[in-house]
Length: 250
Figure: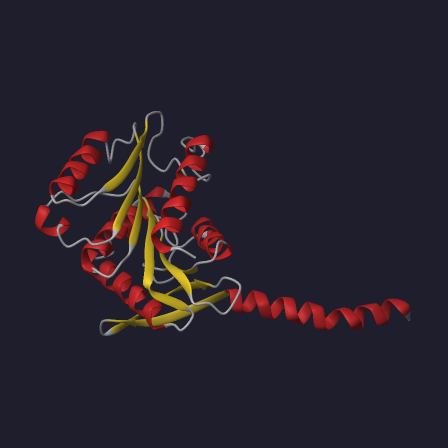
């Protein structure tokens, strides 16, 4: 009987915990052009308003690692929206990832990200002038494209994403820019990083880019068994945390 009473007393606590978890992580949809985009929203504690982040996945899609990263930012005090650019599809191998990434029109991807930014702006628990973006791999390139397309974006962190050097495009950026790159990344080599830095600086737009000499592509992702570099990943994460704290505040 004592065991039953303890169980019954615990029910309200369990229900409260489930309610908190349900609030903290929500699958959502939002308008994007003539269609609908989707993602997973992660909420920090407290009513806010809070700074916010658009979180952009790698070419694998919105998988568990990206969701973990978004949840981590929510735990740090940000409303984090992990956008699902593939509309529910997730790759399990490089061939499928390649197919999904090539099948995503860039204008549609950028449209979804701008729509995510707009959605965050409308939320009462978000500081509308304190919204940033962070992305890795394909998502890093899209983070830069979002900064070009959305002048109200406050800060952007690009992790080994494709870089633009066209000054007409880069001139549209008003966000503070942070970048983390691998010195052995054959897709985005140091020369590309330096060209991006030079183009930004020629426009009077400061950029903080760091190249990790011994790192290759995707060095921050622990699922990258052959290329993950824990020490470099930890340093990159610390740089991002400091960057967003300074640019977006709490």
